[in-house]
Length: 156
Image (spheres, rainbow, N blue to C red):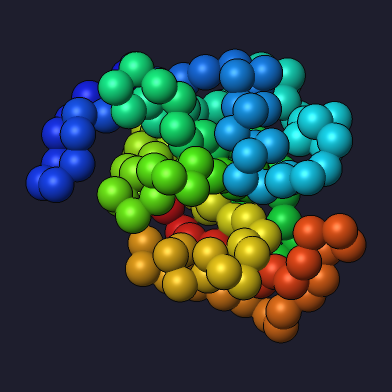
């Protein structure tokens, strides 16, 4: 179900479920800059259990996130989802769009009785996720051709 809202100092935005294919241009611009477009897909994009959300500003897609069902060996929870490929176009950052997008996804997963959300966070995004209630676990690790990351998680 789409959610529409207006926040202080930001224009009206809408968040709605989209297809994996629709996420590709944002993933490419934000997360895979300079790499082939084929590097933007993830294996779970077309599964029925995968959820993709898009944030629209004035009817333009400016942010995306994907949630996939995946068990982490670090957690015992029966129902876990993993956040993948979250990004907001650079010129639209600083308006809390990422916070709204993440919050929408978390509420959606809670409505599905998902117990834990986890993901690999780029170093530059750790503060953002901490400010949104997530915590790191373990040490920093390198994802080849992407960079340093922390495993982050939150009990839902």
